[in-house]
Every structure is written in C-alpha cells, then in structure tokens.
Length: 346
Image 1: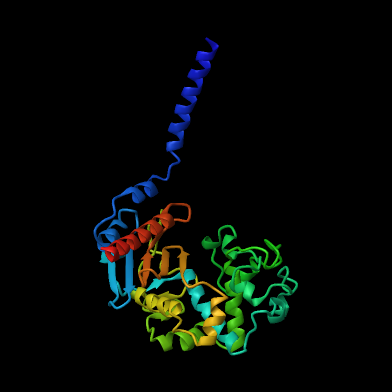
Image 2: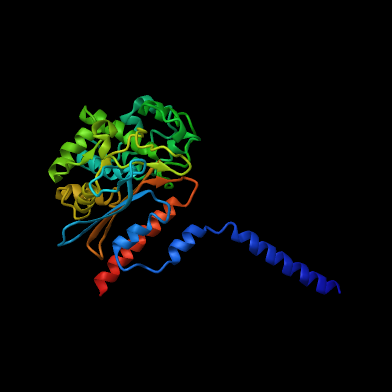
C-alpha cells in the first residue's frame, strides 16, 4: 500500500511540476520559431508586427543587385505614419564599428599605439581605474580591460547622465571585474574612453573625425553623430513596452543612420575597401566586422553574410530589456537569412 501511495504521489508531483513549468516557457519565442517559413522576405517582415514590434525596416544589399528594402508597421504610431525605408534610426552599439575603424586609422598614422596603456593616455585616471597601468588601448577596443560597464549601473537608463564625465564617474574607483587581458566582458565604458581618446588625439569631435575619414570617402550622407544634428521627423519613433509615449527624443548619445548607409558601411568594412592595405591588417587583429545595437526603443542587427555575399540590416523600434523583444528580433532576422539561403539554393 505504501508503495502505491508513493507512486501516486510522484505522479501527482510530476503533473504539477509540468503544469507549473508551462507558465515559464517563453511561448512568444516558441511560436515565432515554430511557424512555417514564409515564401518571401516581405511576408517575414510583416510577421514582425505580430511579434509586438511597432515598426521594422530591413535592407538587403546582395552583390550584383540593387539594395532591397522591406518595411512593416509604423514610423510613428500616434500619427499612423507607415514605416519608411529611408528613415533615420538610432544604431546604438553598431557605432562601435565606426569607432574601431577610427582607432585603426589613427594607429596606422602613428597617432596612437595599441600597446600603450590607459594610464599613459589618461594620467588623471591612473588612480581611479583599477589596473590602468596594465590596460592597453587594444584591450579597450576588444572589451578585455575588466573595467565595469556603466550601463549595468542600476537605473542607468532611467536617470541618464548628461555628460561623458558624469557617465564615467559611475564606474570610477570601482574594482575591476577581472585582470586586464584575462577575460572578455562587453563594456560600454571601454568605448566611452575610446571616444575621449580620439577627441583628445585629433583635437575635435570624434564624429567629425569619423565623418572625414569614413563617411565622406564612402559618400554616406545619411549618418549623423546625434539627434542634435537631424530633422527629428526623419527619425523613426522608438517605443518601450509598457510606456505609451514615443521615446525618440531621449538623447542617449547614439549615432543615427539610415539602413542603406549602415549597409554600405558594413559592406565596405567587410570587403576592406574602407581601409588601406596596412589598415586592413591592423583591423583584422583588432575588432569584428558585424555588430548589433540596443538602446531603449531601438534594436539593430547589422551583419555581412559571406555565403550569400549579402549585407542584411534590420531595425526594430520596440524594446523591453526584461522581455523577449531581443530574442524575437534575432528570430525574425535569422528567418530572413533562411529565406535568402533558400532562394539562392533554388
């Protein structure tokens, strides 16, 4: 009798645990992943609005073809303006690729040294950033410095500091997360310091240097340093789940660009036409060639796919740092790539 009761108890426990576990399954991700692959990219882009994105822009720049653009949802939800392919967008951390290229060019011109230390470039921070005398410029670029990430500071996005110095103060005098060069941890603080270093080296704004050395040679006329430089009507609205209002006017320091401009930059980076031969060698050992970006209201995926010889850029304008939006964005993007692969194999 005792054995039967034990078996019954186990069966009930397993049933209860199964039912409970169902509440923790990320069903939106499961459903998005399991849906049959549609016939066209446009159909997949349309599906993004079912995932909860207010708007989406996709640019496919495949070799020997004109760039193709796909949109769905809203450029501005309140005004019912449809998403438009030429809209400006906050590209967030995709801007780090431009920074890394800028560092490469300054190194090539002997204005910077990848093996020089943070303490040498910023003596005033030598006693305020742990291991500053061991952290090299190369470690900063590669996120191997151990310096804490300022965006991990609690409530950072709710109380945005107004200046770079105020942002830096959030992590000064804090212990390192690991010894320099011993590990990897993505840290926006690294690139804040790189911004300061570029400007200290050239004597003017980082974006002006990027404009002169990268944008103008590539004829990229729809890339900007901040929302202060643009017609705000061109900027796609940004939304955060649970917040009704448009948050595009929040100034978080992101670069702004169209999908077409980002696509042209990513191709030039990957085919190395953005570099001299020596610069290309420096960069190959320095940083990556694709990137993603995320700030409140804006998600970007910018990749070159060698097997397709295609650059695919995806902008989605709805975020929730505690939700499934980033995973859904990646699923949508990966399904677009599968559609391209299927088309190529037909």
